[in-house]
Image (cartoon, rainbow, N blue to C red; front, side, top):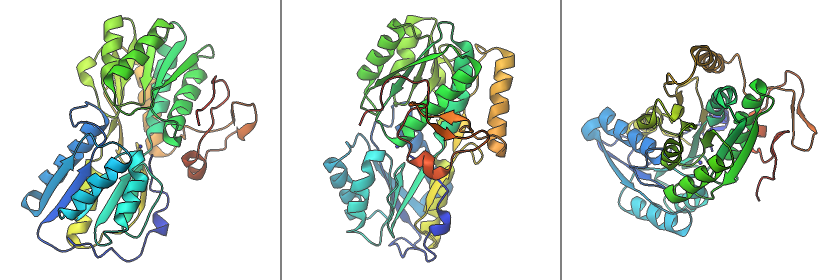
Length: 357
């Protein structure tokens, strides 16, 4: 899953003549990588679908297919949705990128929206959120709350979005706790509760008393709750059932406003291919309630960082920052460009191990 509003200036000047443009009823389809009840990533995308229904009532029909594997199965699912008359189709996982572009080429009058990818076409938009902003806040809290100085991170796939999140969390944990260590387990899945739980238990057995995750289920929360004395952060959704412990806050993906906007543009005939990458400032990235397990002064610091990011006064990747090999990446006071962030494939200095190929 990846994200943006950076290349809007390169958007097509003329709206796509999609089949639903100007029609009284538009059919919006959604392709999900996990189940709508995962409590995380897919759940929040489905909340966005429901927001579309609420916004447009009888003027829209929504359909969805859940648990669609990335790859050939995605091609079949997206094709079927287009054949069934969808006017706009949201494909909500990074691995749907090539299948989306492939199917879009065969349905030029259908609008396609791909989450977290980077390939566009006349009838394909991309959209994502700046999750690294939320990771910075999580890292700040984690660095100050760990007692063992060991933080575990359950990573999904080694794509720039995930690597960015690891680096952001680590830099901000390290800034407030020079003794902190990160252990990263690559699960190679977005949603597999058994694998996620096993990864969390392994990290906890290795001494981690803080668990971060870039996977979609609540299984790591449950494993931490079972272990006791471990804190976690909700991923993609609030996961508030685990608060005040072990979940002390969360990153919340708020897709509703974007989905309503894009479906509305199909309805009124103004849809066009764009890249969107938004974050805390627009509300696409939310920070879930910080629980009372977090000391009041630390909560105030975290909320202050959130406000500074939202106002554009602070960028989570501000130099000096060094690559893992010791070479300078960002000089003192320099901030990372969107292009550099979108292609990030390296760990920052202090992280151990290699980014998998």
